[in-house]
Image (tube, rainbow, N blue to C red; front, side):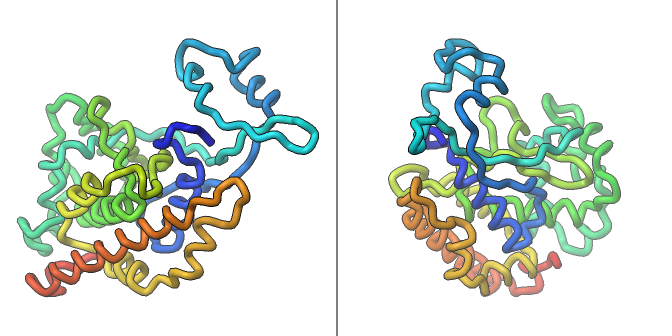
Length: 275
């Protein structure tokens, strides 16, 4: 837990749980809340105090500590599993993948494409990582890739994760291994209404005009009362999360309205093409 508003461990956990609810077709390693004693925290970092001036530890001043009844200090956060061997997928090259998820090419042609053909636009580009991505494709097809990219952008809009795209280190927050995307950094999600514009993630989501039936149905028919308690279980340290939830609910409706508008214009068979 930190005072900087782009690092929200409760949002990290809620993102993992939401992915389980809607079957987001992206691998998010299991997350669970935990607390770490200050002494253990210092031991894990190999430092004597929190007063650091170099590297990432220079940000330790933003950590929020809680004292228990005995005066012991604890930091609250999330414990997540680590997935090794991934490479970066430069999602910032939108011209490479956008034709896969809009109506520029037919669904039939998409089904005929090879995976290598689908990402050929990365080849020869700085930070394109074409061969690394192919090496980790397993049996993923171009159709599978398009399905994942569609779900990835829907998911990012729902949680308002603007941090997927990097303005400097392309692909750094869009990892790829085992033939699929993994999402290991969702701490910039589920902001309160005083911070975090939805414009960026909405513009990205609206590059997509093809969606998954399962994902769409799970979002449309979600038991929202039950989902709130699952994503944001009651916690005395966090009393502002209803506001975060209302933002999610508004984005959910905006997504459903967007898809319904596309279906009305193009027909369901051209919009809902993924399982």
